[in-house]
Image (cartoon, rainbow, N blue to C red; front, side, top):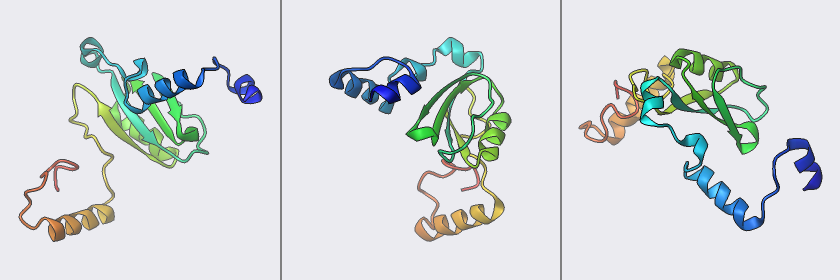
Length: 141
């Protein structure tokens, strides 16, 4: 533990404090995930980027929180959705908009036509009447 702590930095926590800290991260109660109404109105958003854990650092404005050994990167940023999604795609992953005042850019990264076709056929098979969460994931579903 000592060498890892030296390499990564930061304080060493007692087991009970560490468990509470990770529970706050898991449940998004830690300060990093808190966005005030004023911050949201200024255009600050919370994003989840899922990328390979070996992906290099991602150059985006804002604050970053990394977990899952680098495979999940949370961002607080005012950057446009297109910039966030492009950076995630370049790193081999995708971005999901978690919290924002304006969700018109869409919560999920747009699917490529072949994947959208599969999703449409699956939805038609399992929900032929289209009553379960219409437009929830994508407007056209």
